[in-house]
Image: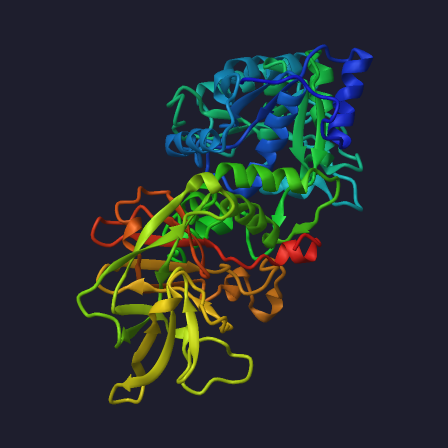
Length: 562
């Protein structure tokens, strides 16, 4: 990982304060962190926050960050997820120092377990998983000791070796730490270190039939890699005493575990189980559906790595769980695309306009600005002709007060073009307006009238003769309420009860010809409509655009920035 030295203006929070204290006291002479996903699913926006913490703290302190796959459960992990995670980490702009796998340490972890047995700190237990849960007790009642807790060291070593050799059926025995069944912390009540699982591991094959639990593998993997600061989400705070107990009893290098609040985002679920359910039951079209909070879904939606990193920097790290408004994520993307996206005109719900006094065979080219925020982006030529398309919403036959766009007898300005006036309408058999008959003022080219008369609205348009047919996919929140996990199970609700039936609208429209041949991932601002990105489903004949984010910035207003 390329790193830069920390500057005097570095971010300050409780994690960075702890790191500075550890360096100043000599507890550690360097900084090494790790990002440790389990390869049992695709990364989501919550993982992006964890990545930002792990990689950025290492960078700020001139250290390094490992990418480690905590792959200790063979029934859920696959190479597909490893490959996807590697791709997503790189896409987000992070580069690890070492690529590691907990499965690389299986032999060492086994030896650590043997060491605990020899110290009288671990034993083979014959209780079933259900019995172990029953014996553990509750928050208000102490646990009960296993009948096999006081087996001799020799018997435990023999049974553990035979567990490894595959002599026993799955679930029949476990290796447990011998700590304190009366501890107020349930994690310290003789936790399981190894369980028997007769399943093929995606990396080690059938070499093993016993696998370490996450609690046992986590801290020891950190120690093996020389991790100084093991940065975890808040739910591992109660696991920290166990993390430290293992390291102390094994007498090995001891990293420092520090917990921070995980990301919770409004109108979103981030549980892997729930995301998997959305995919498997067909509520979305896959892990990269633009409504999904996965990094591949966000990428297809039109989010950029820099916008996601900016969002993570804005929310920072905290010690208490909270819900972040998704409008803040949208603000980070909008803020970036406002500066970088080229402006074009597109009409998503077309209404035909015929300019009756414009020469029928004439086409002229009007100069349009590519990005008013970036003068170096230059200008482009947009074709203009007798027949145009405008948005249906930009016309009303009987307009209410304060509707300033096109109406019978009213004049508006065409973006980059002329003043036009609606002289009449054409309707279909059902009475719907299907065409407007207009006139234009040739003296108003460029958008100003020489006699000084004013119009109250400027609308966008596309020349019908040159229009490129497009498909636009208009995405909204996947859920109708900001807290879809807040359910009333007694009423039969679950998070699926709040799926938004209008989370996707597909429309067929037209765009100016300059967008033809745009590569997948190219961003545009469709003027007055929002920011869009070219979708992989595009064809040369019909590009497909996803609306990444609208123009309206509700978060900036709340934050006093707009």
